[in-house]
Amino acid sequence: MSRKDDKKTTALIVDDEDLARLVLRELIQTHPEIEVLAECGNGFEAVKAVAEHKPDLIFLDVQMPKLSGFDVLELIGTDTAVIFVTAYDQYAMRAFEVHAVDYLLKPIGRDRFEAALERAKSRIGEKLPPAPDLAAAARPPKQFLERIVVRDGTRVTLIPVAKLDYAEAQDDYVALASEGKKHLKQQTIAGLEACLDPDRFVRVHRSYVVNFERVVRIEPYGKDSRLAILADGTRLPVSRAGYARLKALLDQRA
Amino acid sequence: MHPLLTPINRYGFYLLAWTPLAAILVYLLAVPGNLGWLDATVLVIPLCLVYQFVCLSAWYMCKAAPLRGASSFRVRLTHLVAAAVISLLWIEFARLLAYVLSQTASFRGLSERFAPQVPVLFGVGFLFYLLSVAAHYVILAIEESRQAEARALETSIFARDAELRALKAQVNPHFLFNSLNSISALTSVDPVKAREMCILLAEFLRMTLGLGEKTSVPLSEELSLLHRYLAIEKVRFGSRLLMEEDLQQVSSSLQLPPLLLQPLIENAVTHGIANLPEGGTVRLSGQSHNGRVHLAIENTFDPESTLTRKGGLGLKNVRERLEARYGKDANIRVSTENAIFRVDLSFPADAADTKEAKS
Image (tube, rainbow over the protein chains, first blue to last red):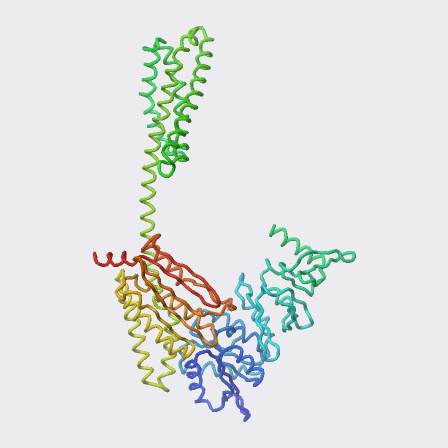
């Protein structure tokens, strides 16, 4: 054991298949220093359990209904060490880019499991960059978000990008406006912009990214700036550079 | 491009074919027309040089008015009108030529001597043009049959290709890995079930291996493959995976291409059920009437899951194989409604039967 204090390493098991969870539980059983706090059958439960139990370590399946393992990782922050467990090897690169501790392939062998556990123990407590920006970094080029996952306490909301009206920077957060509601997410607006299809979303201002389809007209405002009027009447400031980007997209579509 | 102009040596043969025609025209003008050999030759050479080129235009007329399809009356009328117009223009050109020549000392009076021969020239022009139309239709037919041959070859290569890909796609490796993971879990908690699953998996694999050489299998065989596949997935997904089958109206001896339904059922499980936290139902149903079989595979799916690739490789593969096998007689339709993803297949029932009976 790398940590000699009497505190146990706490862990979560997340997989949508009962039998897959069972294998992990068995493998962990031989390690009395690890305490499994909960087992989760889907991503929502996982996000909730992380918020409640604050585990040191998660064994996380990648392919799960609604929320994938990568979505979960993006939502839970980086205080938890993550070991991905999957039958698919094509996610390995992405997994390490989001600073997963290890990547176990099903069926899981004992030796491989022990090695992953050792790595995890040495990594627990390490400070990592904010998860959403990591997820953005791991996104394959030319592939943009189709939905945004947002967590509010233990509640998880999925916002399809088509339903996103605009995003507004608020300190370390972005406020995502969708269907009349605002959702806060810990991410930089530049990080969000990088994940959105530039043919559909425009950075009209230092603090605003807007869904191009929601813009109904542009009005002059003051000497150098303009306002974008959205379909629901929202008025957003448009900077000079933002106006140039809007016009470029308009020309490209015409 | 015109088929007689490329390659260039073909055009040479075409010109050669014109030589006797030109000789006939010289004779007509010189002897019955009383123009004399010199006058007739001097007139006919430029006339024929121009006209052979004009006659090439029949190609475009023939392409615009194919023998199949349009009414034969309209086709004939089109060509007769074209022949008349072109011949009229030609005799006007001939008149002009005769007039120009008659200005020179050696052909004085040619214009007047040529005038009575104009109707003859019109007749000849008319006939030559129609001859050209006939020749072009022959060329067109030859070209068409060659293209049909190439197409048939392409289709058969395509069909083979699709078959090969089908065989390669037989077993999704992730299905294997997940199943092995389930077995490894069961070995300690339920060894009997682990053994059962090993046997199911072995049977499934053996069945898919044997299918490589077959062009058709009875429905009963495809079904026993599907049942094994679903039984294995059922171990993984537990109560999340429900199955329904309604095939009473379809003969179990119905012949169909091997592994036609398996990729669709696999899609239903991996893209449908696997994305639902509470699971769902895969439903296979079928009917046969009027010598056709209709099969439908339905599954519940998550309409909000943008990750669901609707169809994907498996569906494409099934579509290609059906088309390669039955051509336009096969139908495949994909629809989504109220969180139900549905694939409808329909193809002739007897065609497969007779095929099998002969081989």
